[in-house]
Structures are given as C-alpha cells and as structure tokens.
Length: 79
Image (cartoon, rainbow, N blue to C red):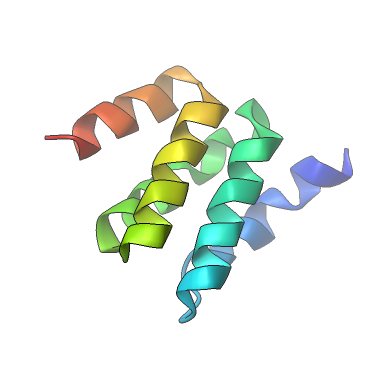
C-alpha cells in the first residue's frame, strides 16, 4: 500500500527543523497505524525532544499505532 511506503519518509520528517512538520509527520504515522511500527524509535525521540506540539502528536501517534513496541515506548516516555 502507498501509505506503508510513506513510513520511511515520514520517519525522516520527524527530524525536520520545523515543529509543525515534525508534529504532522507524527500524526500521519499514527494514522497509518500498525504498519508504522518501524518508526517507533523515531517517534519516541520526537516525543522526548519536543516542543509540546510535537510531544503531544508523538504520544498520540504511539497510541494510534498500538503495537506492543509502541505501547512500551509510550510507557517508557512517561517515566
């Protein structure tokens, strides 16, 4: 599927200088769901880096992805 093919590019966008781009990329990965599991480490890094808009979007993305790895990453981020 085309959305799955977008995962690497969206994961790379999580490193963009613009917070709006990072937040949008995180939400897009979350909307793709479980196929975005490979991007969980990049999403977690974005969550930790912030700013708040990016952190909220990244946390939501982890919840939307919903895989065991995403859930563990979210739990680790809360500590």
